[in-house]
Length: 140
Length: 173
Image (cartoon, rainbow over all chains, first blue to last red; front, top):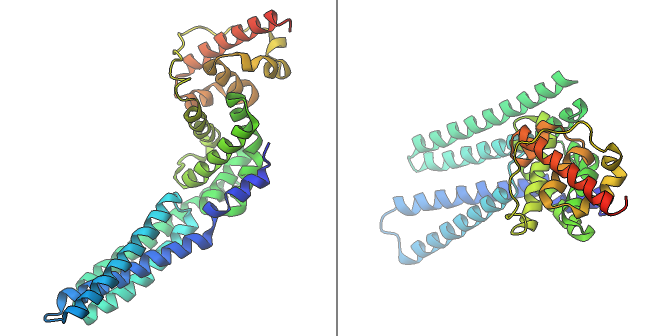
């Protein structure tokens, strides 16, 4: 019989917080870059073909990375409450960056919606964590 | 399920990795025992049990009732076992509503004897005996794991014990 410690070793990857944070940063970072470059490409008229090809490559690679990170996170199962709070904080950080970039391009309402969405996600993550912690304390 | 485990399950849902480790240490043997009894081979049981724990870690944040952890855990284990047994299990018929006899041959249903004759039973009957007698799940929890009403669990137990008694008497046990 494989021991419980050996079984735990087999779970190291799926339990790894570092791995989850890495994919979250990849998801939000690559997504932010892809959206900013994409909006820039869409909003600028008369760009040379070379520049357009460059933008297309950046958007394509960014979306590819974001999709891969999202898929890896999805395969890893639901996030624990603490992990969701971390995900919410990262989402808010990248949302602020994205909103700043969009504001420079005159699209501050879109950036505002993204930031409000990220705040909502973070608030909900905190609420889930508090509910579980309260439940644990009630049981002690 | 014992009260202390509910706290560990909630801590694990919060994201405390040590609580997840506690769950694995506390329930690994029970899960492995169930899987081993159902599949018959140590190596296969090792792999399937690992698969069960991966599914448990992935799904744990979604578990709404920590009190139902044992039933939920064995439901996942059962699913993994059934994936292995697919085909063989599909021919098994559902049991009728028979009463559970109180005058069971307790000597036969003793854990040691149970283990001795269990492998001779069909999957459906073996499974209910393992869950109820070896894993100490309640009738309600067995029902949740097996996805059948408590009455069906009782009738399966009744039939399984009768088959076990017959196997033991034929085998000279």
